[in-house]
Length: 102
Image (cartoon, rainbow, N blue to C red):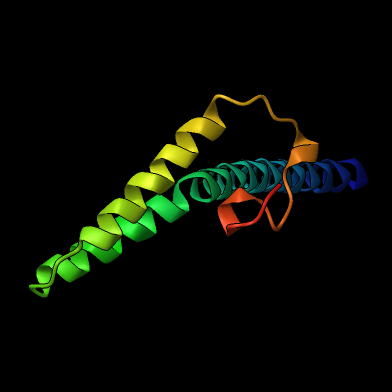
């Protein structure tokens, strides 16, 4: 009878381990998606902000030529950065996305 209870406890521990493994895999996937999103936003963030500001001005009836030219220059800067070979050591908190130099 003691063996039967031990078997039940073993099965319960196995289920808990599987649940923990699934949760760990989920956390890793969410972390990778977050890292990718941060990278995309840092690369295109300035362009998106300029375009959003331009749309807001146009909707209010004002000219958005300054925001349009700002979005174009930000996109041109992103295009020139895309052609450069960079490693992980080239990125910092004050990088090109924040307006500084890497």
